[in-house]
Length: 220
Ligand SMILES: [Fe+2]
Ligand SMILES: [Fe+2]
Image (tube, rainbow, N blue to C red; front, side, top):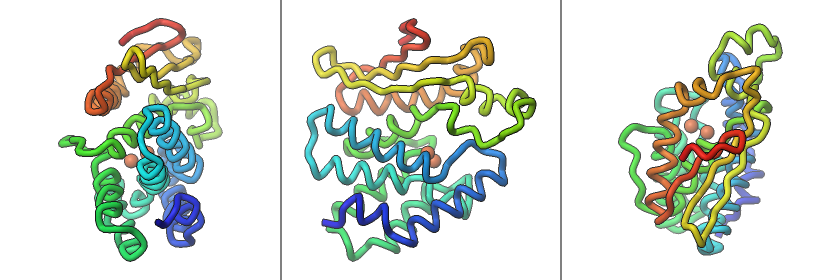
């Protein structure tokens, strides 16, 4: 099987991610480049492992995580579909049909309204992606401009985001540390309520509850 390491070193994938990084910076979005790709891949891999799923699923989740946003350089609105299709174009002969379709489904599913889960890889990808809120995602360097943009403000105020699987309590918890001097917690909900709903759906598919802890307060 083609491995995560092969995909991570594929020149086409790396170039699409590089182009995406540029395109998102031009749109003044938070980081969707290599930093985000690697973080989501590693987080997805770890969640699969903590859930006690197979090595194969761990590898597929890492690959889907690394590639999930690489279609953004062509279109923001349909980046999930384009990402899945370009993944197929590069790797169609490198994976078994069921592996390539699992990765494509996970990529196409990660950012759409009619999101639904048919396998653990797609559910874990959503948890890994939607939980990436962090100061290091903010590409804007002018603090005054950061303060004016709600997405930048929330990311900038977030000092830590961790996702933990508790197999006994059957709960997947996202823990955040937010600097409330910089951004009130209500703003997090204003912007990320949809993301949290997606995470809850993903956790439910895996047979878990979704928990949210912000600054030591359990909110879900
Ligand atoms: Fe995305
Ligand atoms: Fe993403």
